[in-house]
Image (cartoon, rainbow, N blue to C red; front, side, top):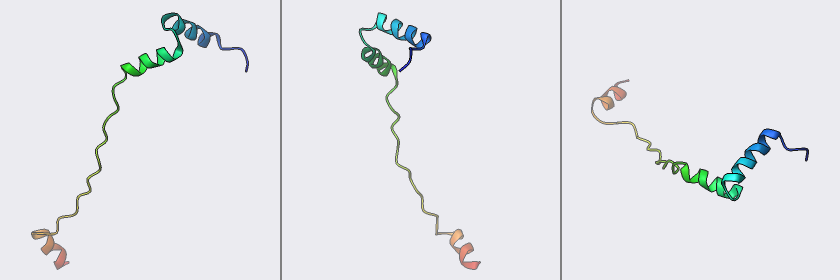
Length: 60
């Protein structure tokens, strides 16, 4: 690998100065993130086949 990018190295140095390791820094970031959104199952509704709609379909 080549030399590290100066800006990236500066960021790493700043993070390591505030936290004991990059893992501690990432744990801190994850603790600040909202929990994942709960995904509800998709509800598929069947078409209505009663009442005037049924009469309209049978007349066609």
